[in-house]
Length: 212
Ligand code: IPE
Ligand code: IPE
Ligand code: MG
Image (tube, rainbow, N blue to C red; front, side, top):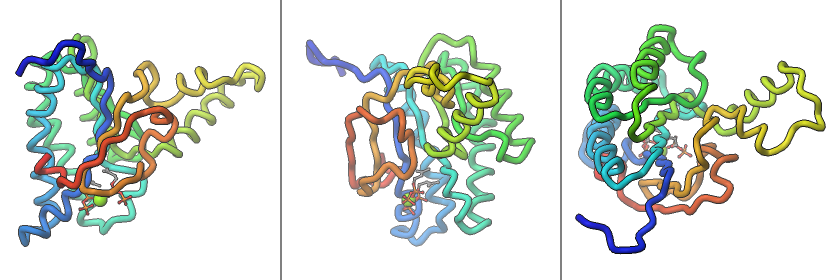
């Protein structure tokens, strides 16, 4: 597909991948099957975004509020992230994708956190699309953590401005999202990038994430 002249490609697209559970229920499958199916389309989306020249793609995969789900589902989501890293890292690395994690890594099981860190380290010098995975991410927690770090660094109150706060958030160095996409028909941010998406365009679709 060639793009019409004058087309502007968003630099940063952020996606709230929602509707896995409903996708599974509609098919009489367990919710975790919906989450598994939801990771299958990522490969195609990353390739297409790279091809179009998108520089940053952020995926909301697990929110700080998602810990409130039944422990079986939480454990399943942890396993899916672990499997995703095992299965996809080499392929993403070969495509020059840079992996990045946003959110609280420290809240994860140490083995999983280590696996994420290794994948990030392996791909950090790549020159292609940055794929940021928001896992154990919450916009409010991100701001709380930034404020804690600013205070711990002994910064004088008069020095604090918007740019400084942005630089302490887990998205530091990334441009704000130009566009936020949410699947499944819900129209809210659910604590995703609440600071960074202050000026983003929002696009909602009723399609469930595994079908996106
Ligand atoms: C989104 O799908 C994935 C996560 C939040 C982990 P959901 O699990 O929220 O699916 P629905 O909203 O119940 O359909
Ligand atoms: C938002 O979806 C979080 C992710 C997609 C990871 P949820 O399904 O958890 O959000 P709410 O509970 O409907 O707001
Ligand atoms: Mg949901």
